[in-house]
Image (cartoon, rainbow, N blue to C red; front, side, top):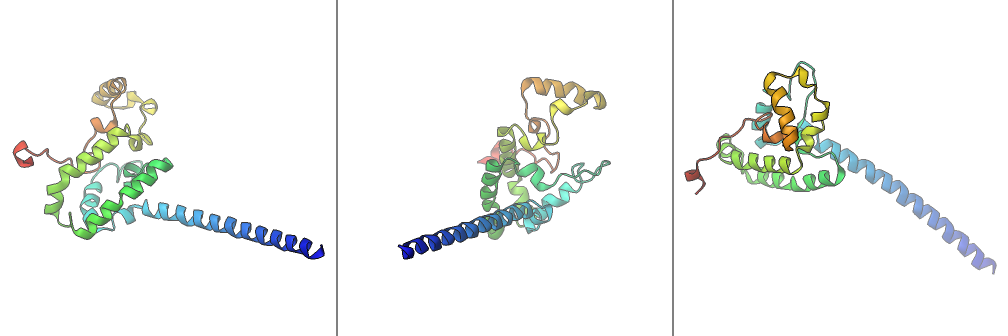
Length: 188
């Protein structure tokens, strides 16, 4: 009987030790996972690929990069959702960007320009589908002081709000050059 009792005690100790190891391992995994997400959201990471240098140079010329208030939007602020599930989907979908970087799909200005319209329309569709969620994390209609806006914005923002428009419906080309829509002849 004494042997059985000691066996139960050692099994209990092993269970506690194993639970502790799993708990500590989970904390370490969570920390590393969180650090990885944060690292891949940094502008330096996003623009480290050769093909993103074109975007970066355009972005440097916008109010989202440099402005009087000193507040800067980074790549992730506009292109990576904040809610966890949409963020994970965006991170998985970003694998295509790595693939295209490796394949050299847009590694020259000419290749980039040839695909600019397609890339832009995909981003606009994604932004429209999310009701410009990433824009609204900084620019929310309800928080706007219309009296401080110019006459055009003062007139258009309430109308856009009433019509349920997404930011991207009116504000294309805010952070990157807006591409010219290709002629119908070019699409065939």
